[in-house]
Length: 235
Figure 1 (cartoon, one colour):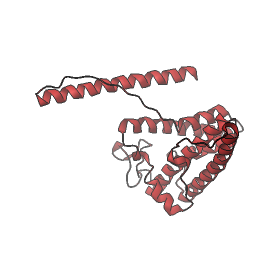
Figure 2 (cartoon, rainbow, N blue to C red):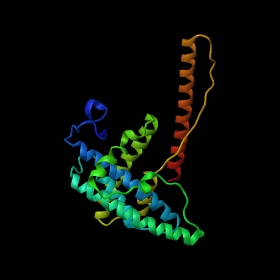
Figure 3 (spheres, one colour):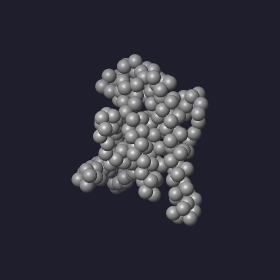
Figure 4 (cartoon, rainbow, N blue to C red):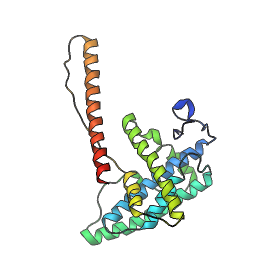
């Protein structure tokens, strides 16, 4: 397991054997698998929206699913097994509708290569436990990408917690569901380069390379800042 959702986390880094809060490894892993499965459902939800297929129930389910994974909300492994199964069932039902509508519209099968969460399937809790180890937080090796991605996921969990409460009280906004569905699967990349002089002095060359990497990192950070500001101003 690797859980770093809260301020109680071990060593202020992440709980890796058992949560300081009492969460068991099996629970944390199933939560990771549920998020992975919800990403698959979201992929088909976005495809459906592109084709004019809009189901508020799907968005509500995604919100409820993410809400279940927040800190201390639910430590019931059996409930997470049920939620993963429900997610995969809803995903495949929506996938069938999308594939049929896509073929009707384009006259050909959908050939786009999709993320593994869009197609992975099992109904076996033992397989769930093994798969969960492959799709957790640390499955993203690049620390910067991992940090940005998990920051987004944690933010979405908070949004979905309020969205779920509002839905229970009879207030729903599909734009919130659309935002959660779209952002949980959001992927992108930014690139930057910085030149430096390599000399015969190894220390000087290493220092120059490190300075160049820092300049490139600051440039990428500025690109991200601009992209985020642009998205916020248009929302």
